[in-house]
Image (cartoon, rainbow over all chains, first blue to last red; front, side):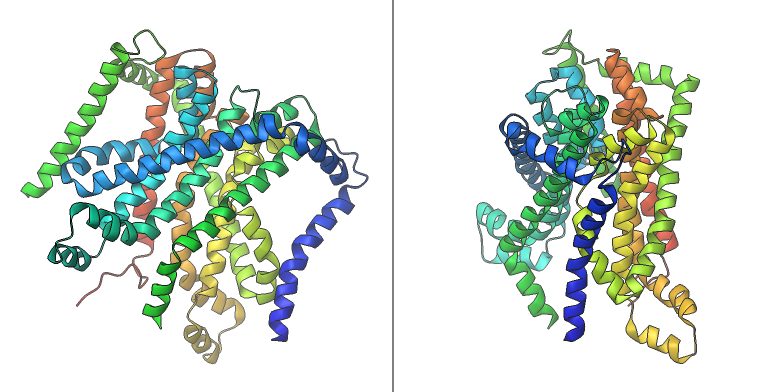
Length: 257
Length: 257
């Protein structure tokens, strides 16, 4: 019991100590690349709270959410069709695997060449890049649905719609969720990349522009903000996933005990 | 036999269909835009294959990805064994690692480019930043998962700490490390491309950036095709290597009934 308390306090104390050490070590830093943490925090507050909040933070997040939403809906729908219709699977499998082999960020220049530097380009890049993890996870998830489940639903004469919504979707749910989590990370990366490549608005663009014009505390402020968003997005996803898939964790626990 | 031929034939039809669609879009609705016809892009690809710079860039990208991956693997497994073997260290680092894990390397790209400039070292550092952390965390999980009976048996046979670590704990953690490597290998390639595209490091990423900036769109598409193929090769090679190297582990052994 005492040991557990010690471990917990270690877990909480280390991050606090690290930040304190950064603060102390950089306090009088003359190194241009590593300015004092206090200076970074001042710029952080000036820039993001709330000067550029509406113009850049909300813009980036809206692009991220929009692209991600399109990607996951399309990924699940195409995944269902690909998994359940053999001809579609045979025809699409090679094409899908080739497209997902392309590094997602390399799609950004393609979209720039086709539709320019606007917001549509950013959303389209995010959507296409984030499509494949969800799509492939959906196909795998449905392909591995227990055959007994399929047989039982046939015996009970479930209609096609009932089968899809009440048997296949829940059975493949956990796998689809993992795919969607990877999609979210890809979407976040492409959001930054699409802003860094020749855009002047958004958090990624501001961070890179700050670096190019040697406004080092501004660059650090951008990096911190992006880090917090990356962590926060994943955290929100985890919480939602645990909520929605609570039945799955429960049934696993029952099966194990 | 017949069941094997049919999917392959339909798959080839799918690829042909995708190319036809591309041809149709390029000559029809998007005629005169930046989209080249597939024939044009493939001809450009063939022309690229005869130039020395293309092969030098390809070699740079592969070297950066594989070299960074190798450094990440050695450092990550060593750090993971260390962290996983000592309970207090594990608790002390857990919160920090969990915070850093969902943050992609593209976030710190401006900082790394600022310090190291658009060089090969910069690309190496980014690849290591991107790949090491997941390997560390998977190794820690693997160490934690080692069969305690095997460890106790080794201890009662009089093995020392170092010997147990190398001959019991490390092999036991191998499947976890294998999974981490399978995820890290394609990621290493992606980061190597990102470092070239956004940071100006050497390799195919830089070629893509130059092609896009110069408006040389057939070359851009040819390079993206190359990256798609390269991504497939990386995925296939790591899956094969994993199966070859870990065939002895019980989770990979074929079940004989």
